[in-house]
Length: 232
Picture 1: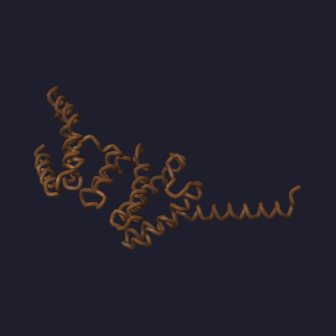
Picture 2: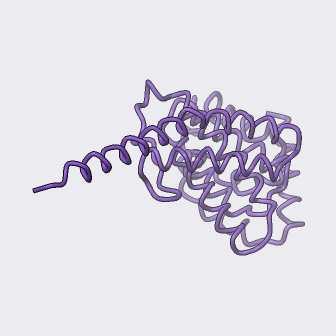
């Protein structure tokens, strides 16, 4: 027969733990807001600490391991603000760890980039996430170029293989110009549609070859595409 005192003690401990978890969960937004402010003010280390505390609280609340959060742990409508918040935090962490050195930093970079993809793919803000990666690659010359390109493709940016391969060199407007030319001009004629079909057949191979080329050659091809795009 169970000891009544022992049972009451266990209930008290369980109740105290639940209250602690609830209070911590309610404070999570304070860490997120503080992290955003610190990041904006270029206090990167402190921002990262607050971001990681926020994520840790959510992981503990959802009872998942580190890096185990997934969109299906949330109610997609009721928690959409939280989902957007998480996506923004993951992106800030991606940028920080892209510039950090060492094996652990690289591991953290890949983990946060994977989370960014998971929380962006197939969502209403997926297009914004795709454009965010594109602009970052064009403007900031990331260290982990291959990983960003792969993320761009996984988010749906695969319809212009050559320009995607050169995202770290081409101008902002080039990809949009090429897409517009395809949709508004080429697709309107049988010859143009044939060209698109051939391009989709050979494009991945051309892009792969460009990925293996020296940087100066890739930059030259990018400048050539930029000139073409300006005339479209």
